[in-house]
Structures are given as structure tokens and as C-alpha cells.
Length: 361
Image (cartoon, rainbow, N blue to C red; front, side, top):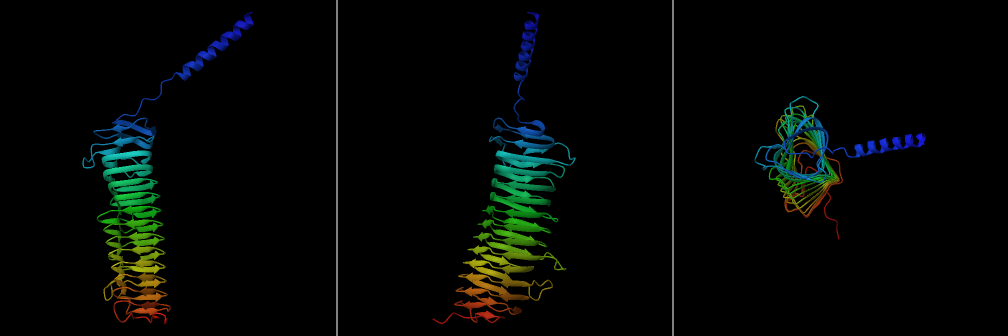
């Protein structure tokens, strides 16, 4: 009998212990103005009159499908604010909505910020930090101001849509955009000085300028640039050593004011230009910083002017057909053959290269 009682006692103690563990209180819900770090998960939406969360170090925030709403995009109030300036400051925000904030994140340091699967709307600007690394993945930004700062280490956008939201960088900050759309920006959708722009498998539509770059390498491939005032505008920015050569390949330019306004060395290969007022335009001839433009296997139809390059150039296998203005004007070209021009509005059809004309029917 004693042995049975002993066993029963042990069972009772174990059950009591398990019940105590199960009844432990869950962590309190996150509230406006809390100071947090590490892994944080929202359990409800918050609307905050001031800073939503103060960050005491590196923080990963799962919005849990909920939202953080602030006092307005003109308030100057950040949704998230790092306490202090000591690096590293790493922030991740995912799975939810941020709306009506003056800033998404404020920092006196050099934060690394990643947003994934978020909707951001009505933002004054992304950050007030001078040096920032930004990654945006599978997100939508609307009316969210400038993403970038005076000198951004890297900005990488992938699988996202940015509307009335633009990218800017200076001081050797690089911007990469992949499988994304940037649209409806009155000024430049992407503005860079002294850095590199890479645009791949993406769309720039209905912007004042698609890409504006100075003293910069601009590389565009497999992209669509449509209905911009100027699709790509490049400037040497005083690059006296000719350090940058842009590459623009396998892309479509439609319904732009000017598709390419080139002020630096560039290779332009395999692109389709349609219904632009000016397709390829480079007017650096005779200047101290002449740009050399290489054009190969481009199709230019139903534009105003197709190709106007007054500096050094080379042309091979380009087709300029049924443009209302100039076909090919490249008086200082190296003719590599295979160029075709006919039914353009200005004669001669080609200057600087020999072009085949319309086939005889």
C-alpha cells in the first residue's frame, strides 16, 4: 500500500507542475511608445500619436498582418526610432501595413533596413539617416516619398511596386531594381550620383524621368520604360576620365518624350523604340567630355527622331523605319554595316553610315 501511495504522490506533483507551466502569462501586447529589441510580433493594429516603437538595438518586427498608423505624413514623426546611434543597427519589418508616418525609421547611426511583404502608404520619407542600406522585398509603397539618403550604401528593390515613391542616392550609393515597377513620380523615379544603377526585368512608367544619373554607371536590361518625360537621362557629372560606360540592352521604350538622353559613353543593344518623340539622342559633340555611343541591333519605328548622335559612335544592324523625323544622324560614326533606314520624314535617311533602303516590292 505504501508503494502505491508513493506512486500516486509523484503523479500528482507532475500534473501540478505541468498545470503551472501551462498557466504562465503570455507576454503583454505591444503598445504605442514601447521600447523593444530582438523579435517582436504585433497581436493587434496600433494607431499612435507619437513614435510607435523605440528600438533598443537590432530588431525584427512581424506585423502579423496588422497595421501601424501614425499622425500623418507631414508630422515628421517616425514609426520606428533607434535609441542611440551605436552600430550595428539592423531592422526587419514584415507582413503588415505602415501608414501615415513622417518617417518609416529614424536613426542617428547607419541602419540596415529590410521590409518584406509590407504595404507602406502616405509616408513623408523613408529615413533621416545619412548612411543606410535598404532592402525592399515583395512590398507595395504608395505615396511614400524618397527612399534613400545623401549617401546610401546599397538600395535593393525586388518583386515590388512603388507608386509616387522614388529612389535616390549620392556619394557612391548603388541602386538595384529587379522584377519591380516604379510609376507616377513627377520627378526622377531613380536619381543617382557617383554610384551604380542596375535595372533588370522591371518597369518605369509615367514618371518625369525614369533614371537620372550623373557620374554614374547605368545598366538596364530586359525592362520596359513607358510614358516618361525622359526615360533615361545620363550626365558625365565632370567624369573627365571616362570612368563610366552605360549599358542598355534588350529593353522596350514606348511613348516617352525622349527615350535615351545620353551624356556618357554607352552601349545600346537589342532594344525596341516605338512612338517616342526622340528615341536615341546624344549631343556632346565638340564638348570637353564627348560621349562615345555604340548602337547595335536596335529597332526604331514610328518615333519622331530615331537616332541623333553628334559625337563619336559606332553602328551595326540598326533598323530605323517610318519615323516622322530623322532616321539615322551620326556624322562621326564608325559604320559596322547592316543598318537599314527608310520611310523616315527627313532626308537623307542616313548620315554617317550607309543604310539599306526599303525592299523593292
